[in-house]
Amino acid sequence: MISIKSLKLLTITILLVSCVQIAAAGINEEVVSEIASDYYDVYGSPDLKANLACDEVFERGEEATLYVNIMNNGQVTGYEADENEIGNDINEYGETLTRTYMSSELLSDRAITTADSMTATLSVVDPDAPIKIKLDTLLLGSLSTGKSLGSPAAFPIEIYDNAKAGTYTLQLNVSYRHQKDSAITPPYGDTYYWYEDLDQTMLVQIVVEEEPYFKILSTEADLQAGDQETINVTYVNMGDQVARDCIARISVVDPFTTTDDQAYLGDMYPGESKNATFEINVADDATAKTYSISNEIKYKDVHDKSQYSDGLKVTVDVGPATPLGEKVKDNASVIVGLLFMVGIIGTPTYMISKKKKRNDK
Image 1 (tube, one colour):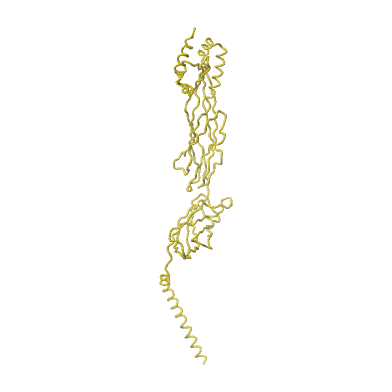
Image 2 (image 1 turned 135 degrees about the horizontal axis):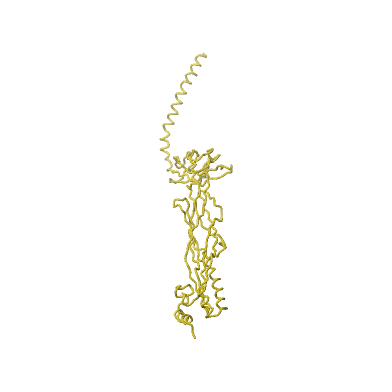
C-alpha cells in the first residue's frame, strides 16, 4: 500500500520533471515541504571582518593599492530538531535510512555560515575626502567560516595632492548569498536548498601623513626669443611640517638653457612663502608660445632625511624676438646718454690738462 507522503512525492515529482534546473537552484519552500523532510532548523550566518593587509599611512599625491583582507568568523549558534518529522520518517522508511539522511542534512545545513558569490564595494564615508578609488567593486567568490581570502582584495587608490593630513575612513560593503536551509527527500535522497541574500558593511581607516607640501604661488617673467633674462618664482609650503634647507631646482629643455638652475630658500615653515630667481637663456629661434619648466624642491624632513617635493611646473610666456631696428631704436637713448656723459667727463679733464701745461711753462 502506498503511503500518502509517497503519493504526494510521486505526484509532485512528475510535475517537476521539466523543472530540474529550478529544483537544483532552490524552489518554493512550501512546495519542497510537501516532498522533502526538513529535520533541523540550524541557526547562524556568515560574519565577515575586514582589515588592511598593507601599510595604512600614505603620502599626498600618492597612487597606491589598498589591500584589504576579509575573514569569515561565522558561527553556528544552535539548531533545533523537528521530532515529528523524524518520528514520521522512521515509521515510514526505517530508522537506519532516516538517521542517515538526518546526518546528511545536518552536515549540509552547517554551510549556513559560508558566504557565497561575494561582491565587495569600497567607498569613502565622507564624500569630500581627498581620496579617489579608481576601482571600487571586486568579485571575491566564496568564503567558508574560519577562512580568509586567499589573497587580499586589491583596490587601486589615489591621494589628492591637496589632501590634509589626518585619518580618513573608508567603507567596505560586501554583499553575498548564503544557504539558509536544506531539506532531503527520502527514500531517494534528493536535497533541496534555500538561499538568502545578505550584506555586511565594515570600516577601514587610512592615514595621510604630515609632511611639507609645496605649490607655486606666482611666477614673474618677461621672455623673448634670444633673451637672457631672469624669472622669479614664489613657492609656498602648504603642508603641515617645516621643510629644512630648501633648495629650488629647475630643469630646462629646448629652447631654454641655464647655468643658474638652483636657488637656496632655507627653512620653510607651514604657510611660509619664499622667492627664487633663475637666469634663463632663450634660443634665438624659439617659437613664441607658452612653455612649462619643470622644477622641484629638495629639502630635509623632521628626521633630517633628504626628500624631494612632487614635480612642479613653472609656466612662462615667450614672445617673438625683437627686430634689430627696434633694438637699435630702443638703445639709441642709452648710447646718446653714454656719449653725453663721456663729453661731460672728458671736457674738464682736457681743460685741466691744458691749464697744467700752461703753468708748467
